Image 1 (spheres, rainbow, N blue to C red):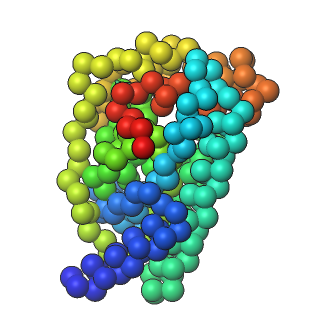
Image 2 (image 1 turned 90 degrees about the vertical axis):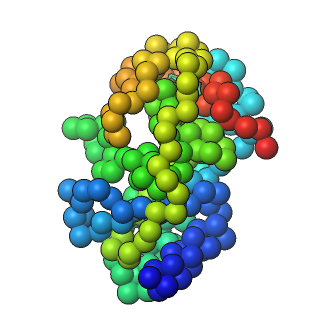
Length: 226
Ligand code: SF4
Ligand code: SF4
């Protein structure tokens, strides 16, 4: 038990020192098809810049798109280095990139949902926006995941959805992609990712690959200004 706590603290300290703002640990309820021998999950998040989010009004901005990509790159670096450190401790680990896709066959689902691991780690809940809302920063975060066979313990209880009667994000979404409902089960989609992506591609192709908007993040009242 003491060894588990020590190695978990070591990995958490490393993640924070590399730039993560939120770190959580969990045991997965069922093994992933991708790597059934890695039953534990580590969730890491970095907070997005308040100043950058302030540039978003009713449409995405270049500065947000570039910031989004930089946050993903930082997360991928942190996850990569944590996985290497876990290997040095004698275990296996697989970093899962911040931005995932399984190609044309399954463009809107990654190999494992970061939100599921974050949720099991007690870091927050999936809001009606489909975004993951953390206790500290609301949805102003991006996530990556590390799967491992290094035993870890969840430090926080799983949080219930805290959106209440709010439907601000659903009303603000320019694509009409947000249903305005809480997800009923872990992993259930409560937005239409295709609608969101198509809207972006049709209207803002010049800004990026067409899958970032930021309006649902910007309007959420749970997002505390630092
Ligand atoms: S990113 Fe934009 S288009 Fe997509 S769900 Fe959020 S508000 Fe709607
Ligand atoms: S805007 Fe309101 S309903 Fe949407 S995620 Fe935030 S708190 Fe939940």
